[in-house]
Length: 98
Image 1 (tube, rainbow, N blue to C red):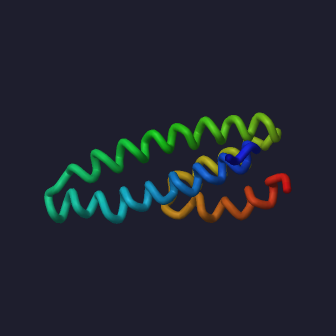
Image 2 (cartoon, one colour):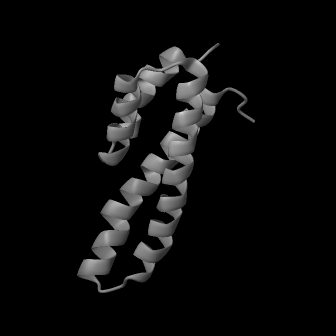
């Protein structure tokens, strides 16, 4: 079990990032190309829950580590961009206690 908030945030960021990619590049094409909306319902709901957890952990880590508004904004905006959470992970890893 990951005990520090940055580690938890990095883990959920990775999982949330994967769910976003699955939603965009697998579920959405299945909906519009093959006219099968079921994968979007399942993956969309999963991604939504993961995104909410991501935001909660972002706020918890930001409060605990006194992150700036600019850094918090960067992390939030990166979560909206495909592959964004993977790029910010390197910065988070550098901040994570050993």
